[in-house]
Length: 455
Image (cartoon, rainbow, N blue to C red; front, side, top):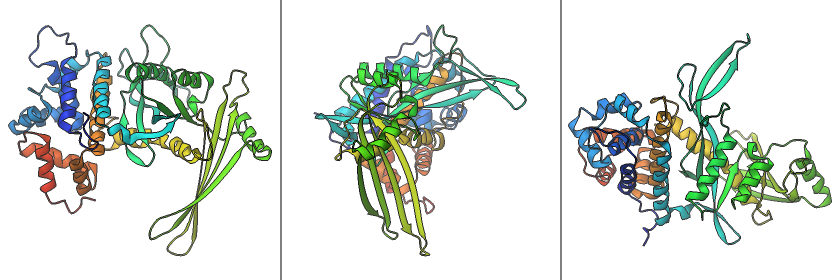
């Protein structure tokens, strides 16, 4: 019987990760440190928010208390040096990480936590909103590997500079109005074997769809995508795999928006307006004007698929403390293969706007809240750069699971006031006191007085 929502333990997540790491193929004929300990060390670097591998090695390799905590909390028997960690991790096949993400996701499903992310029911089946976007995580004019993307950049004097880099396609299950997300295994955008051309985000999306079908055949998805995917091949790919989409589109003078405007006169375009009031001290009036129309072609191409359209004009108006009238206006427009009607148009617009969560709640968190996404932990010659990113996403996923489902973690976070202070307090506790399990750390932090500058 599955564990009720809100009861996932961090030790269970770590046990799953360690068990899967123990099944990784180790090509080393002779070794002193098991591969599972090296992989768990890589994971712990990001779980403990270490700014560098050298910092992690110096902090934990030479200190008995810290080393005992690594054994108890992460099942790491021996801490590798930063050089050793890089050398071994570089030759680990990145595809093996997919099983780790899959096992964690299966545990989330069994624990019913995933039910908190049901976006909407469509034709009697629960669907989950998945925001997808690409991002770069390494750039250099000198360092490169066999998987690097290569680009040319010209300055004002037309001088060409060759740059090397790595990109990835990240996907997170999101929920409008909820800040937590559930990231899936990212798809690397790399130069494919035997190819002289750079990989693209759309090609990576094809591989992602394939993996999603293999690993989660029953999961019904509403993809939240940007305008890059507003084309026939991408839409066809999504529909062939049995999923839905909400794709952002730009307001232009093209065929789609002309048809929507003409439809207002003919009655083909429906308009729905609602007014809300929000705020306590300052009452703000929110006016939402939705338009929607069905069975339109986004392009003049004869192969262009028929889509449904919706947009929203949001006007927020209020008076400030000096009695001056203030107003903010936002506009968003989308295409979708979901049947749009008066009862769901507002929800669909909320879903479309939630696409920004893959940027704000995923990339921004990984860059600015302790994970150091843009820091070069090591590039290597083969898989090192990718494997560090995969370890980082695993740590991020476990942290998100804790924030969603662990009451102790949520209370400590509320007490600290910021995740930055929370990570600092956990790290400080591990530095000075020996703990047998994570519950001891959480209980210790709950019993401490919150710092005065916690905000």
